[in-house]
Length: 372
Image (cartoon, rainbow, N blue to C red; front, top):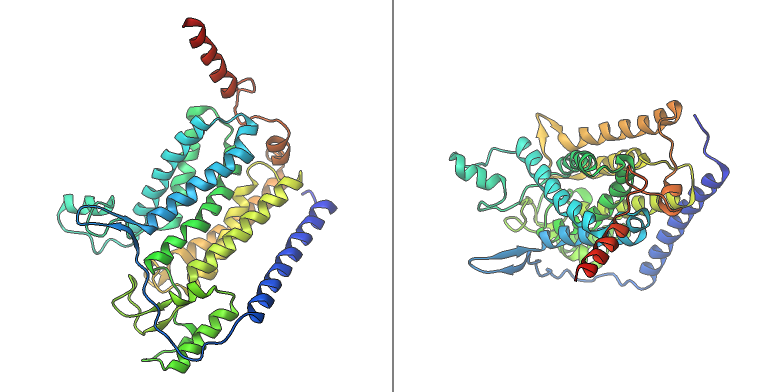
């Protein structure tokens, strides 16, 4: 197994140090300009709908998912895809089909483990599964979306004759960045939260206890607008907490941790030649396995198999697989092609090295002009 070179080690140390300094500065700044609340004021609940009429509705949840996917796709196109001869037409095709595949996978995975509420009528049950029932797409499981996306990428690469490892190397960090944005949809829905802050087991909570909860969240560097909207009441939240009070914003923790992981990996990959095409799989499994293990340990609304949290078990498997993939690939020296060399030194994502969609489009345009 190859050892990590000194340059990569130095880069990792700098990234970790920069992260630590950044968090420290945020903590210091928020401490200097923060004034403790003296009385508790009940915040105004969030509206989960961007538009809602009798015949039509758009949830913020959908807006955040689409915004995350589209913004990351644009970023990926201008920073990587166009430099490796992958045109916008193929990107849009892959994005649209991949997005539908991911959502379908997330929905099916959720239904598999939580199907008790489905209507007895087969047609009504089908409508509920595809999100056209009375509850919409109110149940999605991210692990199902991951599996569906991987399957789609394999098929897409076969059809388009694209290097699979190269496309996966681009997509998985982008997928994580899209999750950073998409998780805020859970915030607008007031779902996917953790336990009651400070571990209170009975209510109603006093004003002093509610203020203590806010203080705890502030010390975790949670922004004030997030703290305000983690004040949940019975029959208000989709997950229906038992006690009115402040709950841990697990969506926020996951969003921040994913941002840190994805950005760190992208920076290291751009600087080091020792990150190979496909290493994003090992990174994603390892990092996201750790993140989800932490989050699922706190979640109050998990999918279950008996007494086992499905996502918790999956996170452990992800972590083990990620570490094994990273190590075994280097032991057996499996297709060690530098991502940096391909992405930033004029490589191509196509199996046919002579294929260039940009030139093909230009030639087609010239042929049409000549005919005219």
